[in-house]
Image (cartoon, rainbow, N blue to C red):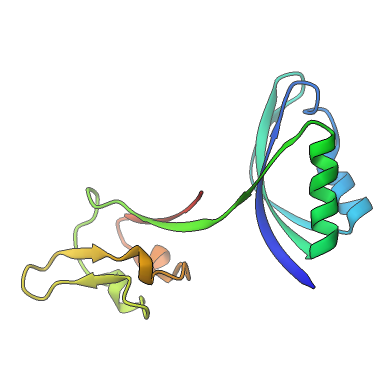
Length: 137
């Protein structure tokens, strides 16, 4: 079954020069998108990738990366609301169909209920002050 997963790969000094992403694509038939990267040969670094492929291929590919000294962590997305930068305009509530974000009609203050959030990310693009963002945990 095809699936997509976001992963954080941490490279130490010795693994930073390995063409790891090339091997994941070539040998394990994994399609990748680089979301963030900061890797320096001889120093190490990290990259966040979105990997798409057959579940078994992704598993084997990440096992291969681990065997080469690369630290692998599967990431989950979460919505983060910065209450301090928020102006409580309520724009995000118009697109939040799961009522994770709501505006109190009496006090005109915004609140965020993380349990209702399905991380659809509609609120991220709706927020005029960038007080709502996607983060990876």
